Image 1: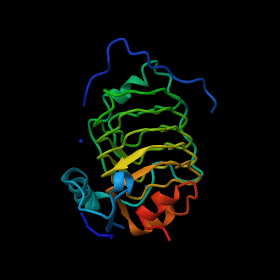
Image 2 (image 1 turned 180 degrees about the vertical axis):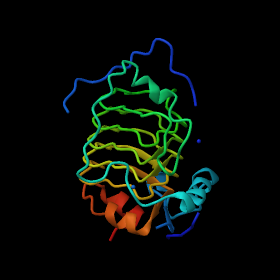
Image 3 (image 1 turned 135 degrees about the vertical axis):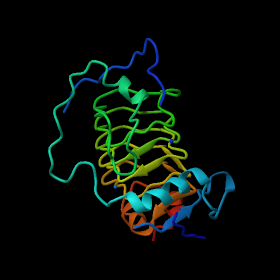
Length: 227
């Protein structure tokens, strides 16, 4: 069954061992789906956190992405603490991708980071080629994030708002999108094997685009309503 609807800063961790990796040089009308895992079927209304933000954003948002096609990315930041900035996130700006400081997280390694990224606002973050494998990104706000080629294997995006983010060629194997808003986000050529979609909120047009990704498992395709 498919239903439609219209419809979150911490300090850096002391002694963090985060380091940049070696350089290699997102129509509202929601679709709510549930995964079949543990025998669970059908759909249900999404929680207030995600839908509440989505309702406010429907007015303020514009259907553009942070980095337009063919646009060059800025040079890599030379700030030695640029990776730790994610632990604070942006203190202004959400749906429109406005930010008070550039979040250049390219090539940063957040593997198995369980404490310092939860609930952060990562508006317009540059995340390409970064590693978030096994990280806890619950309730994060990723508006217009550029995550092309990044790795999110087993990452938990529960209750997150992922609005107009670009996950092209990213590795999302085993990622969890539970009660997650995926408005206007793209996943071209991304690896989405074993991704969990449970109570995921996604527009119909966005769903059609997502279903073109053939790496999504058959069970997940059925849960999403891919045809």
